[in-house]
Image (cartoon, rainbow, N blue to C red; front, side):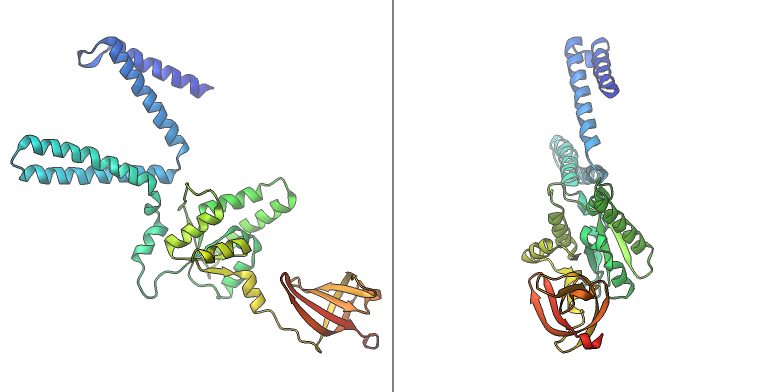
Length: 329
């Protein structure tokens, strides 16, 4: 409420100044109207600046200043060589008006060009240049990325966009207890990565305000930086590959290095519940793989040695079937 009152007073005082102190000998009423319109324009600009991000404001300022410098240089160069002084003066004024305006528009619409991560792209060497890996929210919350980096299996610079941090913060502030715990875990993992000596983490302000979905922003950022996306999101994985962006999926890597279990081998599992069929027990491996054990219902709640009878690969993962031998008890 206070800011509204201040704005009203500002417009009224400006209009009154134009009425009582009219410039250039103008009519007081006309001067008051013009002053009031200028005050309203100033307030409108203030509202737009308040809503804009610092990156856009910075881009507008830099673009305008570069336009002024370029316009002054071109105008001075033309004026020194032109035969008609009036034409030279006119063109110089046009340079000083048009080029700053163009710089302002380019600076606001392409402010990401001033982002350090974007500039690095143009200064990378053709061979052995800087390699970027963009992390999404799912892979940060998952946590395995920290161990992979410490083991030295992920090289290059890990890029964390500011919009991913905002999404992670919103999850950490969620009223749902489980989501809140996952979000805080993600923030802890990110803090661990930043302090790690084996990982090079870079937070980038590069954003795409015209794009709403975070996944689409990640794909566009990967294209700009010629980077790969590190994720656990199946949908992002598919869409990114369809749009020509390379993806590193942690789950796919985990499945690739998962130890192979063959029929006839023995293994120890902990039975936690009954199976669907008679006298079956069910166990789970550390990676979530379900193990269905025949003849083991009475051993629920115990560690048992089983003999693997078959391995079934399904769309949701791998299932292992085995049999508990009474004689091996």
